[in-house]
Image (tube, rainbow, N blue to C red; front, top):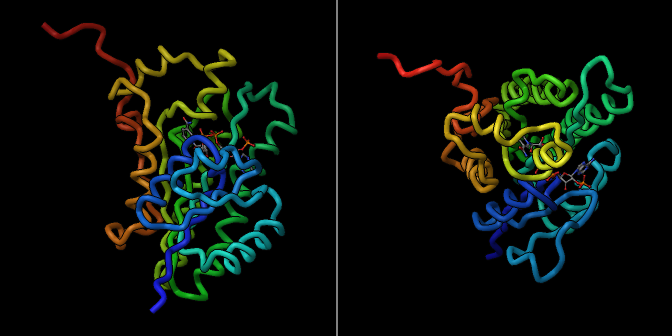
Length: 253
Ligand code: NDP
């Protein structure tokens, strides 16, 4: 009897959080395909045997074609992780149309294209799990308008898809990470637009997240352990979203 190895596609899976998600899902027993613009890893540094397929999530027709090729060559897509995302820092009044639309294309249109292309295939089989990566920035984030807007929209798309497909065997949930020392965050620190000290002072856990902690949440949401969860967003943020953010000026007497 041939045993089907479940297949997981991770967009933006060549680097940062996506790479860590791929490692975790491979350890969970998935055949993982990192669908990204660049390989980002070389043979020898890829112990989990993660496959790479070139994909630009902003290419709507290309996404459908590549997902079809993955299904033909690797197997039915059981899990999709919509992880690819980009950031642009600039005040609203100075933001260019190009900056706005580039972020919207990747972070929102890309998520929709991948969700629809994978979701249609999963619906025909009545089985599948999708996890979208949002962010704590979804609450609103000064100087990061397109990012915050798209990450909030991803939560709306997640709850809608979660509701629409719940009775048809396809579960859709989201993870909203806090700050992780990977691409999107590091670029801001290196450019000097994000201050690590200020950020750490605002995180109740007083540290950044490790990418493996985000991957663990994804692993849970694609597992049977979360089988009664549909359309939810799980915040993995060291307590950031539950803290009002203004500390007492001094310890009360
Ligand atoms: P990285 O920049 O390290 O990794 C993102 C990956 O996505 C890169 O390999 C990138 O490729 C790829 N990518 C970008 N655009 C596209 C595209 N059009 N098509 C396919 N792949 C693309 O980012 P992170 O790991 O930090 O972030 C991953 C996700 O987590 C993002 O959605 C981000 O918004 C989210 N997140 C990150 C947080 C953090 O603190 N780091 C906090 C909260 C959420 P390339 O290098 O070519 O651009």
